[in-house]
Every structure is written in structure tokens, then in C-alpha cells.
Image (cartoon, rainbow, N blue to C red; front, side, top):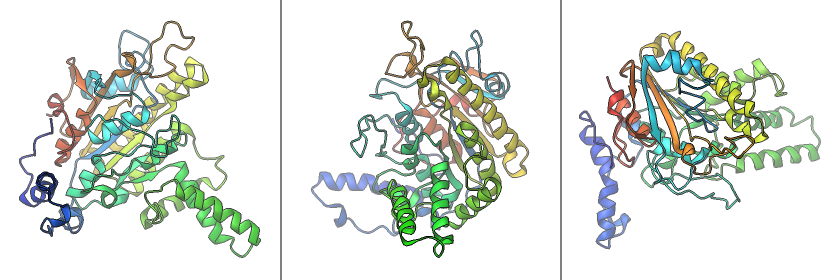
Length: 410
């Protein structure tokens, strides 16, 4: 079921979001959408005429690459995330029986990320037709779109921090929903985005020094990188705020790529610097080092959990050291999916092929407006994360399904 509209949801926002329902009735009556009367509140993004957003800020951590409960939050087993379990969970609410329902046809990194962002289970196919590809498009709005629809939040203050090995997830920044979409998109910080920025800059800096052949080769390379975001051909992340961010990154780490952190440590560094320089209201960090278990060594998986745990500690400490974030931020930590539990495999958590264990996850919420010191043992669902974040941020999420995680709200 869709979540209820918050009490403070005003008439202007209600009229704007009601248009989708009117369109559905018109279609049923045989009318075209263009035949409906124009709504001046939809002519421009509502955020551009809406109020400033005052919080809480939300840091959404994808405890990713697929992480099972056993190595993450179960006290009786070997726990590789002691900070999460023993320090953070007591400060908030631990949902230790969260599930990815069988309504989700598949469990996976991309699918789980969109479950979290949209609050809806759906069936996804790679838009390019690539075998085993995960270039997906959400059919209903993401949390980023809802936030920017309701409030005057600039694009660079809604951010996904993404890993270098999951380039296909660079593009989960907006849905293809006709009332939301690109006008309400988020931005992305990642090594791919930095490389694109850097190549663009190097072409400008070396225009007179390179031969014609070198210039053409570099321009072809840039065109190929920019074409990956085929739905957005307007310069990608070329906002002045993002350009300034990458400029400072370049001054610190240079051009080689051999100095800056890699893997999930890179994501932690990007997230902390983003909070200092870009001041995001909604920040999603897509950790994924656990997935290195595919190399065939269990230590790659458990080490990945430990790296995420330490990264979360660093981000929490950065928030607590920042006066504007300290008492006005909510952390939401949830895996994209679990992993298999095969007694017959040399590495028993090699993948997440729809086994029961791959659907068994958890969530930890803590911070402003969150209950403290509570463990919720009842079954809950991954898609409830979106409705809960919407409730906390004061935004309606009418296309999300599943009730709010009421036990989390103080």
C-alpha cells in the first residue's frame, strides 16, 4: 500500500501530485493527457517555487555487495562490523528480520538499490539488452526526485557516491516517470565521473600541444564516456559546484589515479569531502567491496564488511564534528541484498541467486527523530526504507509501497 500523506503536506503539493491520478482517470475515459487543462504548478519544478529544506539530512548507506546477517549483525556469530553492531545499533533501532520479499523477482545489487530508492519491488531488464547487465531504469520516482519535487534543493545536494566497479549504477539518479524524471535528478560522485571531468579538462588544457590525431583520439574517448549516460546529453555533472569539487580533488590527488583511495575507501573519502564542500541534504553511499568474494576467497567478503564498518565510523564522526549536521542528520544503513548459504560451495556466500539467505537482510536507523536502543524482531521489508525516509524528511512518496517503519520514529 502507498504511504499516507503527512499532516503538514500542503494544498499546493497535493494538487501537483494529484495530476497523476487525474491522468489515469482521463486515460480510462479515452482522453489524451494533452487534453487535460494545464496545471501552472507543474509548469516548473515545484522545488523552484517551494520552500527551503531544513532537515533532517539523511545519509543512506548501502551496506553493499551483498551482506548476510551472520557476518554483520548476529551477536552469536563472528561479527565483522563491530562498530555497527555494538556502537551504532544501541543508539538507534535495529531491524534484524528485514526481508526482500518474493514479490521482487530477483535479488541483486542493482535491484536492491532501486528497491531502497523507490520503495517498490519491480522487474528490471537491462536497457541495453546486455546479458547479465544491470543498467536499469526505475519506473516510479526515487527519493531524490521526491525531495527535489517538494523542496528547493539543488541537484548537487542530492548525491549518490558510487563505486568504480559498478558503473551501471551511475545512472540511478532519476526515474522515467512522466511527472518526475530528469528535472528532479540527483548527481553522482565517483571515479568514473572524475575521470570524465579530468579528460574534458585535459583536452581543454592541451588543445595547442597535442597533434590533431591525439586531439581526435581524446575527444572520441570523452564522447564514449559521456555517451554512457545516454538519457542525459547535457554535459552530465557539469554544475559549477561539482566542477569546483573535482578541481579540489585534483589538487589533492592529482591525475594519475595512483594516489587517491580505491574501492569502498574511496567512497568514504568522497562522502566526507562532499559533506564538507557540497553540503548534501540526501546522500547515498553505495558500498560494494563485499562483492569481491567472486574472486573465490572468503576473506574478500569479510574484509569488505570490515571496510564498510570503518567507513561508516568515519562518516558518523564527520557528521558529529559538523555543527550543521550533528543534531540534524539521520543515518539509514541497509544492504542491497544478502548472499547465498551453500554447504557444497568452497565459498558458501559466493552469490545471491534468490536463495532464502539472499533475501534475509537488516537495517539500522539512528539519529535525529529516531528511537534509541530498540531491536525490532518482527519481519519488515526492504521497500519500507523509502516510505520511512519520506516520513522523516516530510515528503510524500505516493508511488512507494509498504508502511512506514513505525518503531523507528521517536
